[in-house]
Image 1 (cartoon, helix red, strand yellow):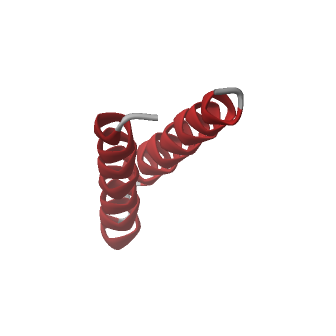
Image 2: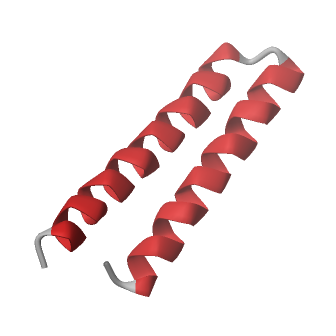
Length: 56
């Protein structure tokens, strides 16, 4: 897995955490859910990259 992919996945995870925290603080359930979804997407991408790395 390239360094660029790791950075992008980490950035997406951090952005998702920020969205989720903002949603919780403001009571905005939609924003909170979006943040959680962004984190899940970043985790899935990371898992996929780990699988690709395992087969190299």
